[in-house]
Image 1 (cartoon, chains in turn brown, orange):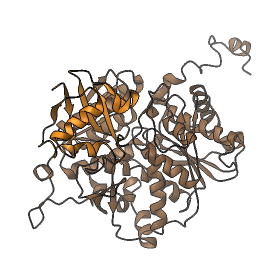
Image 2 (cartoon, chains in turn yellow, brown; image 1 turned 135 degrees about the horizontal axis):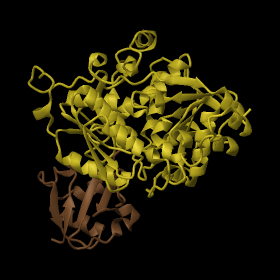
Image 3 (cartoon, helix red, strand yellow; image 1 turned 60 degrees about the vertical axis):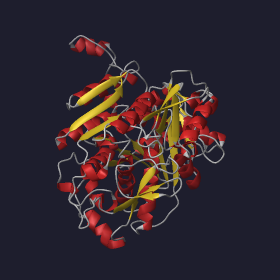
Image 4 (cartoon, chains in turn brown, green; image 1 turned 90 degrees about the horizontal axis):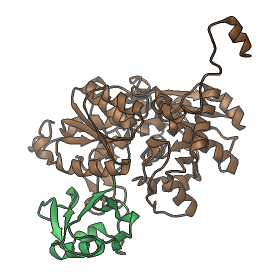
Length: 429
Length: 91
């Protein structure tokens, strides 16, 4: 799109449009460092590398911490660290964030760990972490003058975009694989908007979205042409964990990998907190979790390679089924820099782990959460993860969205007639 | 011209704003080389200094990612469409 023609913000004194996204000052290429002005750009014109938001933060230390703690009870308390305009908290949006950090003593005991926490992002408005990234993308899309919010999605993003657009009163266009879980299709459709089921896998749809984004200049594909802003929303997961732990960093984190952006941004969030003096610098290890049926990053990690070779996904963990993860190389950088690892687990292990987390902690995770718990267990078994160090794992979505995955392996303890005799005969007392 | 090439926004400065252009070539490498003769410098944006596909760009022949085929040596049938698309994050 041509920014000068479509920006909705007020003109500067020299006639050029102004974009006010708070502390964001530019976009910078992660590959070659080339910088461009803020705008609806996501790929470097020099090398195709991904652009990311560069900041100039207004304050640091105690003053900043006080402002954050006095902020709203959602992700907008972190507005001083996000690419969002001033006043974002008062615009119509679904206000995700400040989800629970649950101390998982029962699961820790079962796994032989000392201190384990679950950051449970199923508590967001549409029950996944995608509400965070979409909220930031929506803010940027409005500031950049787009009128339609769009995305290709494996389901959670579809829910989040449809809901956020509904609340904001703008049109949404969502592309999903036609074989997606029914729960995710129906819950997206419930918010209205345009929902397109595509006969293809996620990578096919992602490619289609990239092509549409190039032609529809008025559509903000949240994870394509406003991707630099969108991805920043995941930093809030790292910020929240640190604040909820009493302004400090955990020693180990286990994070599921789809595109890899979430893992990279949680690390970025931790790094910024240290740089801003909000937490003390302390070493932490980042671990990545994948399903074996879609584990290109784990394969690259284990092979000692820097290049992530695409795969064709085949796993029940559809929200992680991205065969060509754009941020895969950066996941490898983060994991290797911090001394972590990337591991993968079978679909059977995923189902077992969903049931384990539900049975021990009363947290019903979607398949991605099952991948994370199963990976935690595997990392403990291989010795890569220290059972004595404080660990946080991220549950990024609600099990109600992926009921099909466990439908054949759970059910009633017994089915009886409505009589006391039947109850007793069933051996339930 | 034997194939159609879809040009991403970030490369349209090379093609005078054209979103699609025609090209000749039996393989992806041939097509890129042909493009570069008419739009000098464009191949250098898709390939790195070693002549391999940059890691943040995807090239498709019709519906297939060339990384699943033979990379730059992937055969491009007459009448097919080659799409150059920046890698994008997941959803």
